Amino acid sequence: MMKNMKITVLAALVAIFAVNCSADPVTTPTSTASSEGSVAAPVVITRGTAHNGTISGFAESYYSLAVTVGTPVTCTVTNMTFDVDLDIYENANFVSNWAANSWQSGLTPETATWTPTVSTAYVMVSAFGNGSTNPTYTVTCN
Image 1 (spheres, rainbow, N blue to C red):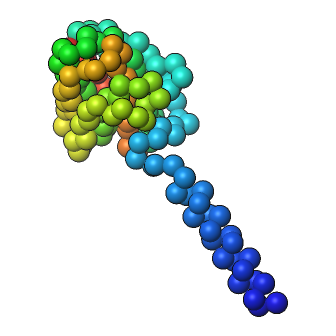
Image 2: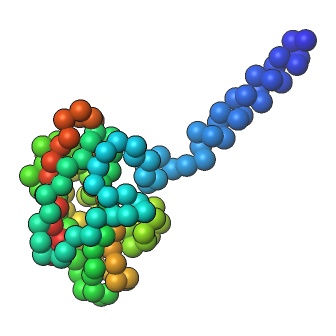
Image 3: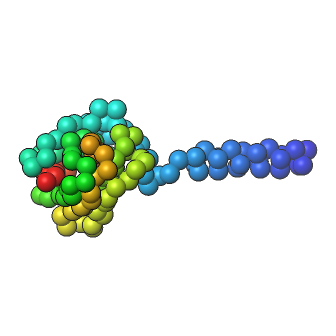
């Protein structure tokens, strides 16, 4: 009986490990809190136009942006009321083709510059904590 219990416990641990290691927690969007846009339907922003956004703690807001292949683009996040990070992708799944990022701490503005290889960029703003107060920010890409 003890041998069967050890095998059952070992099988359970292997199953838990497999589930917990099946996704990359750093780059896979998993937000269920309210924010702007979604992976399937990002908010369209216009190059050169500031967009005031809001986001719930431990959530992401998703944006798409028309860009010109080969022409450098700089995206900034400013006027934050809480710590956010900025990630730029060249794929609509917001996971692969990671192009640029800025992960400053606190209220330091985020800035990421890259030269696009595609005609649409995907911008993700992630918040950390502060889940009940809906932090605000301004995102601009030039």
